[in-house]
Structures are given as C-alpha cells and as structure tokens.
Image (cartoon, rainbow, N blue to C red):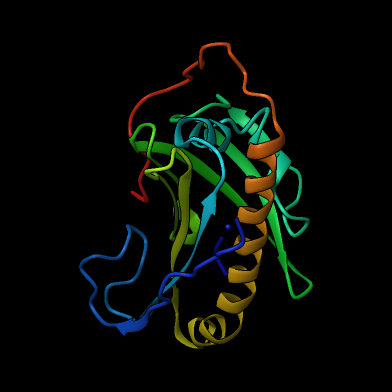
Length: 198
C-alpha cells in the first residue's frame, strides 16, 4: 500500500496491469507485471486558495493539524515548508502500519504540491484550485505501483480505505482553514524545485 461545505466528490479510481512499462517510476520492474493504482478525493474548502495552499505546504506548523488519526506523527528531516522538505510519517490501514519517507516538490507553486516516495513507487499530488466565490477546491491524488498478487489485493481493499482517509483529511482541512486565523508573516521558503519518483 502506498499513501474534502459537505459536497465531497471523489475522483475516478483507475487500475491496470502493465508489462514492460515505460511510464513506471524508476525502480519499477519493466519486465514483470506491475499494477498502477490511483486513488483521489476532492472537496470544496470554504477558505481562499492561497491560504489553503499555505496550510498544506507548511509541514511544520499547519499540515499535521488536519491529518486524520490513521496518520502517525510527522517527522521533519529537512526544511519544513514547501519544496525541498523531506519528512517521515506512518499510515495505518486495517491494522497494518506502513512507514513512508517523502520529498516535497512544487511543480506549480501556489497550486500544485507533490510528495514522492521512490522506495514505494508512490506519488501524492495536492491541487488547490480557486473558485469564483473566493473559496477553493482541493484534490488529493495518490498513485503507486505494486507487482503481482499484492497489487490485486491493494486494488480491492487499500483503495477503499485510503479514499475514506482522504475524505476525512479534506473535511479536517476545511474546518481548520475556516477556524484558523491567517498568519500575516511572509512565507519562508526552504527549497525550490520539483521532487520526482526518480
């Protein structure tokens, strides 16, 4: 297994076996059967997009405060805000705990932030879009690759559980963004560039 007002919508989950993949992240076998699994969740957030993005990108002071209980403590190794941040966390699904070490990138600063874990062939994308009324819409999407029977089991079970976790995270983010007083201090950038699965 790898790694949101009440109108939560969930993106399409797509799965597929692939042989000799050319688009699989580095480390994925291109000769063995590999299953790519996708899970996404989307929700309206009753707060401005720039503020919501800032909360998502700040892994030191804000992001941990809207994580659901399935996530363990977030441990910062490098940085803490935006691209260049490296952090560790655990995720427990169905009693099974998995550890992750991810690097943060910002391919579109202010709109798109990613977390990548090359060891697990996993990429999570947070996309924050502005709404016409001044609010925002956030999408969380995770893609990972798993070979063989493990991939089939994860497709059946893990995707459903992770979707529930993302729904809870987006609900918590909406409440947090509405209730938290905006920080007027300028954002401190700790790094630049784009993280990838390479």
